[in-house]
Amino acid sequence: MSVFASLIEQLAALLQPLFHGSATAAAIVVFTMLIRLALHPLSRAAARGQKARTRLAPRVAELREKHGKDPERLQRAVMELHAKEKVSPLAGCLPSLAQAPAFILMYHLFSGGMMAGHSLFAAPLGGRWADALADGGVFGAAGLVYVALFAIVAGVATDTYRRTKGQMADVDGMGAGMGAGMGAGMAKVMPLLSFATLVTVAVVPLAAALYVVTSTAWTAAERAYLYRETSTV
Image (tube, rainbow, N blue to C red):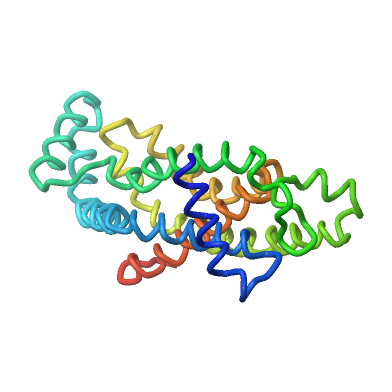
């Protein structure tokens, strides 16, 4: 974690002339973007996998019609099709899985004493939304910082919901190997997960919330770019 802390401190020093008291907050945003840039190849691989699964959806539908009464045979047939076409059902999870260690490390870092004395405008980076509510309320100086973050997250989540709902239209085909019921359940639940970030921002330290908001916004922009040819919105 000391490596992360050192990098953020160096970034904050470079950004000090531009952002003054919010330089550390700006450094967190830049640091997050650097992490996401490093993970971009995984996102591109996930996009290729998603497009391949979309392309195979009609063939999977045929297999489901043919083997619908034999779940085990259907599962084998779908797995064989994916293997033949070199399509991994788990490719779409890679970017999220790769981010998990970084988020856990950053959360512990931001929850420690490193954020003491640093703020984003009037909101301390080590504080939480509950602290802002206790110190001025929703529209207090610190509360307004969270209002802005919630607005950004809500806008990104709404866009992500619409896009994910369209891209999950073929989830029955993708989930045939796991069972039709699970596929249908995923199609209903997955689009709603985009709003979970609102809860995260509300409960973690502001520094960690900045990491989450920046990463979420990056994901939305990245998906819009990578899936621009197959968007069904």
